[in-house]
Every structure is written in C-alpha cells, then in structure tokens.
Amino acid sequence: MSLYLKQIEQLVALQRVDDEILVIARELQDAPNEVRGLQERFNVLDDQRNRFIEKIDHLKEQEKRLGGEIENDALKVKKSKSKLMLVGNTKEYHAMMREMDNLEKVNRLREEEKLALAEELTRQTAGLEDLEASYNELKADLETKKASLQERIDEANKVIAKLNVKRESACHEVPAPILSRYEFIRERLDNPVIVSVEEGVCNGCHIAIPPQSFIELQKGHQILSCPNCQRLIYWCEHFSECPAPAQVAAPAEETEEA
Ligand SMILES: [Zn+2]
Image (cartoon, rainbow, N blue to C red; front, side):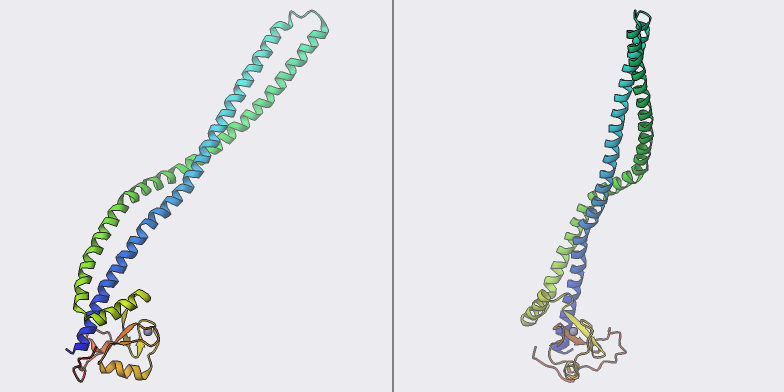
C-alpha cells in the first residue's frame, strides 16, 4: 500500500474514534436535559397540585368559619326565644323578634354559602384526585431518572476515557504535519474532518469537486481538501469497503510526499 493510502487509512481510523467520542459526548450532554425536561414538567404539575391543596385548605377554613358563625347565631336565636316569654312590653318584643328574624335570615344566607362552598370543595378535591395519578407517576419517574443520571454520566465518562486512549494511539499513527492539519480542521468545522468523494461528489458538503481536483484526487499522491468545505477528502474507490463497484487499481506510483 502506498504511503498516501496508509495515511488516509490512519486518518479515517482517527475519524472513526472521533465519531464515537462525539456520540458519547452528545449523550453526556443530553442526559441531564432529559431529567431537566422531566423536572420542568413535574414542577408544573407540582404547582397545580399545590394550588389545589391551597384552595381546598382555604375552602375548608371558610367552611369551618361559616359553621361556627351559624352555630353562634343559632344559639343567640335560641336564647332570645327563651327570653321572649319574659319580655314585658310589645316594643321590646318586636325589637327582639326583628333581631331574631335578622339572625335567621343571615344564617340562611350562610347556609347557602356553605352549600356553595361544599360544591366547590367537591370540585377541587376531584381535580386534585385527577392530578394525583400523573403526579405520582411523574414523581417516581423523576426520582428514578435522577438516580440513574449520575450512573449514566459516570459510565459515559469511562467510555470517553477509553476512547481517548484509543484516540491517542490513533493519533500516534499519523505523521505530525498531517495530524495537525486534521486537528486544525476539527477545531473549525463540524464533524467529520475527513470524507470520501463518491462519483466526484464530496460526502462532507455534497457538492461536486472541480474535475481537475478530482483527477488529482484519483492519482492519490497527496492529501487534498475539498475546495468547497475544506474537509480532507479521499477517493472512495481507493478503498475496497467503498459502496461503489470498486475494482480499485492501486495508485500508479508510490510517493513520499505528504
Ligand atoms: Zn466538501
């Protein structure tokens, strides 16, 4: 195999490791997002639930207060009734009757209010019960995901550490000037750094490379870049694993340049 082809192979091997690292790095990045999304959904549900609980507490308080007031005034009416027999003059009698009437009227209004409160309480309690199932489910899910997140992060970091070792040895295979060209592109462009050219089209940017460049590429003398996207390119038919029907003739001559 020519030096050129060997170098391309080394670069492609390095590219594969970098692809793997990228996949894990994305997983690492996305892992907390999933929990964060779940946490946000949980927070919304938690807020709704708390509003139900607050409302229910408030309604119960009102119910209790009304009940107390009704009882209080009913007692007053009862006392007045027993005193009514002892009243001497008509004026006082009528005044007491009026007061009792008023108290009873207010209490009737309170009873109506209490009924409305009870209805509202039933509605709010039903709302809370509806919410409770999805709330509990999400809460359990969130707790599980939170617990496993750290595990997943640790695991991914272990894989990355292993890949970095693999990367180091892959880098070691590549001559320094070519490696620095690779790293230069890697820092500036989106993955991948090195791509095949299939039927004259760059697999990085999917644009046809100029015929003159394609002829140069097919010669396989030096590592070229795509004139459009600047990625390193190689002719796919130089390699047997290429999808193209490739009965690849080895490049005509060995070359020392690179
Ligand atoms: Zn390109």
